[in-house]
Length: 496
Image 1 (cartoon, rainbow, N blue to C red):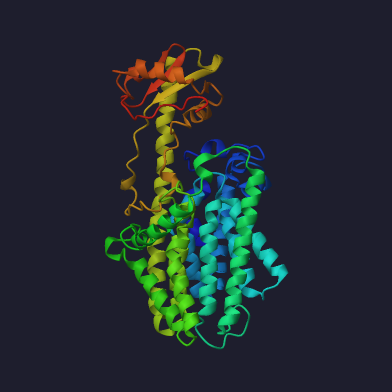
Image 2 (cartoon, rainbow, N blue to C red):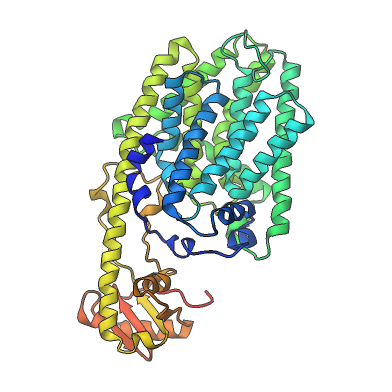
């Protein structure tokens, strides 16, 4: 927790503005669009429990504490008991670049972290208890609620089940005493596999049924499912994607070390195969089959929904858990332990550097964009005489110049991009952002016809900060941030 406070410092002490800050920091209705359009009804329950609005600093403290707990729970699931090894596992989980994305939505920090906690608790319930109806219900409820916070967590649930089954079958020693470990008897282990699979399937079906009751509006791409043939194609494509994420796309590491995650995966596979070597051929085959499913499992959200956001940390963080899984099982092999520990230390170091620089850049971007838009607001006050006497349609053409982000970060980190990199002033948030700066609702979303008229009037005008870049046309306030051409964004019209 202390490391996270140091590394993510600005997220605890100032609001980091993104394209979700408004309206996510406002008091929101219950149920909100999350329930009505996306089926994330338990996320709405969590929001309601915290007062119904996003309070980033409060959520940051709670979410980072939960992430530390999640790291410890994951270590326990994998059989890591020693304090320093547990610390390393938890540190990499908490500092992996993808996690920062879950702190960038102003209201969702806690639900993202708590969803993972529920998934880990459910899987630990399966791992630490003998199969019985009570543990099945408790574990299934935890897994279902995890999905109800964010549907793409199905990849995380799947990975946890694979981790549990693989480590249960492939034990590092033959004298593990309790029910959390495998027995070496394939018939018993086959029953455990069937039990875990049944609980996982039941949780998914219950979540699917609950969304059918909760959804009242078609969210389109967010709830779309692939056809079976598309799923097969996407599953096959997951393997080269996983390889790329473990090598060329690990651009949160120096170029010379970008294959480090692949080394971790290879070392973990070797450790698991060695652990299972004394078991029968059926057990060894199942362990290898489980290992072979990992690339597809971590891409489950993309396999199920073709519109899942690529390179977004809130989805790709599962890759980080997979890499830690492979390193953790290597820690349990005496001859691989120190090598695995060295890799965990290296990952934790570079991830801390990336996280601190991304945090600093996010704070600088917030300051830059707020100051720039305050200048725009000041110009609007000069140009619009009756600004505060009513509401006016607003059309903004183009966007403010991007901050020179790469001046603040050493590593590109393009494949686990935090949402803090996105502008807080996109075409669909321009009205609420400027209303916030003016302290009242002086603007409203324009009609489609007003957008077209404003666009036509802007042709040939010099863009911001030229004097003629802010003006009033037929009662519509127009701001020209860049010369208009095809594809330049314009303020979203009402009803779009």
